[in-house]
Length: 341
Image 1: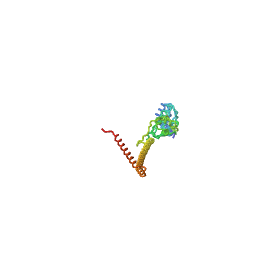
Image 2 (image 1 turned 90 degrees about the vertical axis):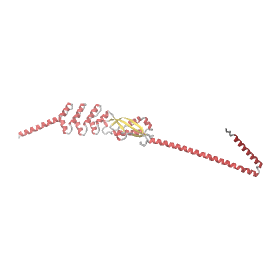
Image 3 (image 1 turned 120 degrees about the vertical axis):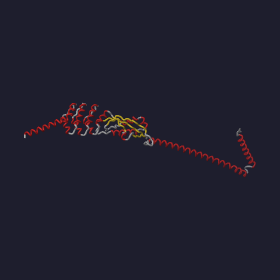
Image 4 (image 1 turned 30 degrees about the vertical axis):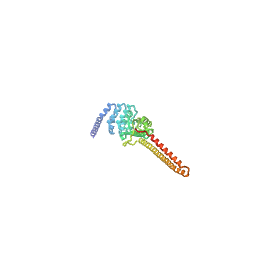
């Protein structure tokens, strides 16, 4: 009985030794790489990672990168972030990049940013090297912003916004879409407050400066560095373009003024024609009065003869005077003609 117990104990010890040897050789490569890199990890920790279903190679590689970059972080924090569903390598790269750029970024903040669904490594790079955002976003089918000045002229504007990531507001802060929407709204509002479109075309920097001073990056994950007007033009009025309200109003106003002046000129012409006709009627009226007065002369002579106020000889002498006068007028008219040839 004792011999059987000893044999069983020996078998168990042999199995345990074989298991330990198997575990050692299984983690030997990872353990040696960590030891040679100065990022020592015990075999028990490697075994615990395997039991917790954490890839030891991933954790060891992340720790090696940190140690080589002059940072030190235990494997427990890395394992916890992996088990939470985070991207361990991405957070480690972000920590290294932030350290080299002298940006204050802790592992807890980086892990929180990563778990929030943000690319923490890209955020650090954007914080060091600001990126440019087109406003409006061409990917959404809008190439230019529409804005109308106070004079009714419609302008097409395109802006470029330079932003830097704000790591402190990256968790819970608004995204790029909010920046684009706010900048677009600010540009439209600034142009709408301009008296004429000429002011905007002459000084586009006033628009960008006014928008930049509005604090559009509040509660966002970015800090606006600059807003630059990339392109600005007056919208067309063709059939294929959206109607430019201001230009159409100017055209219609000019056309209405033209028709008004033509109507006024036509009215004055009609009044002149009416006045001319009236004067001709008055001339005809006066001529009729003269003819009427001349017609009364024979009647007056006849009345004077009947009443004896005019003698027959007096009447003949008056006829002779009239005939003599008529003859002289005929002679004078004939003598005034120049001989031909």
